[in-house]
Length: 91
Image 1: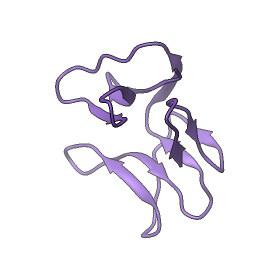
Image 2: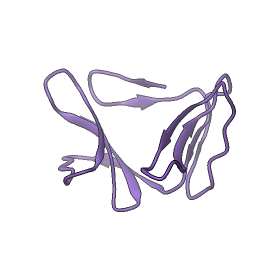
Image 3: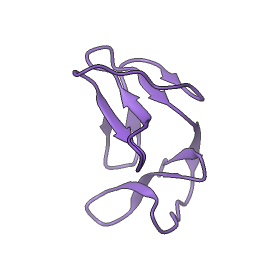
Image 4: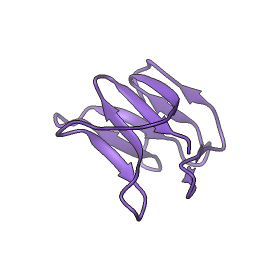
């Protein structure tokens, strides 16, 4: 997975939404506070599995307190997870 300086998220495989992400020791996972997987990037396949849904091409992301975020070096939020969905900003 690559997030470029414009906020584009690129993966090698497919995106699967609204699933129960499964993983092994080679995968990168993001967990909720109780240890459940909410997102898994499968290695080496490159597939992205999301427990929730993905909202694409959002012009502005304003995450609330306790949201999971990925931001660039200038502090611009590129990806956030809140309210049971992931949002990606394309700028």
